[in-house]
Length: 185
Image (cartoon, rainbow, N blue to C red; front, side):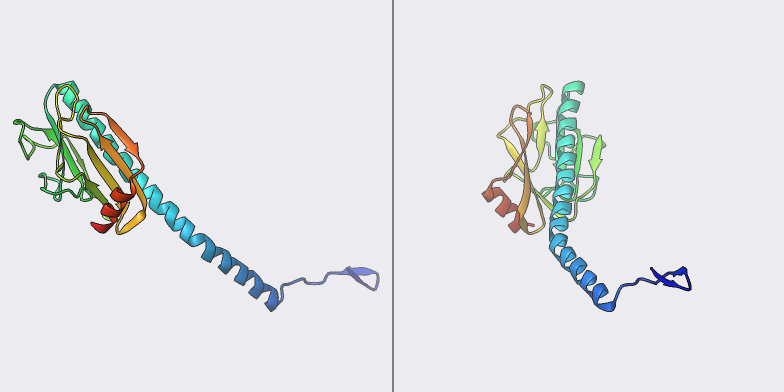
């Protein structure tokens, strides 16, 4: 501090224009470097949430079959009312009971309805448009795998497998599954 007539005088410190421009340039550079990583993190988080929702619906359908001792169907839906005839599940899914082994629709109202995931592609194994749980909890037929990915992007993918025994596993998608998911999105 400078003294004037024995009294300390305050000087006003400030930032020069050059210092402000330099700070702005550094902040912009850091933002440009960090933005893609944040986008990737957001995509992964969204994908994991959708995978958790699907796995929960699969477990609920299996538990419903065991508890009620009735056949339970999990199927994709486009309108939230009826099963659709598609391998794509991103519009949502229904859980409910069905009567005959070859039934394509629920018998009555759905017990569980899940809305869609429009930013994602959720694709089931070719030929597995429905998952049918038997009263003993098994999911007859061959294993079914759901592959989840961001639309058109094979970099971040998840896979959920339903074994014929009814067991549900979350795994990493294979390169082939990831490419199929991204190309059909």
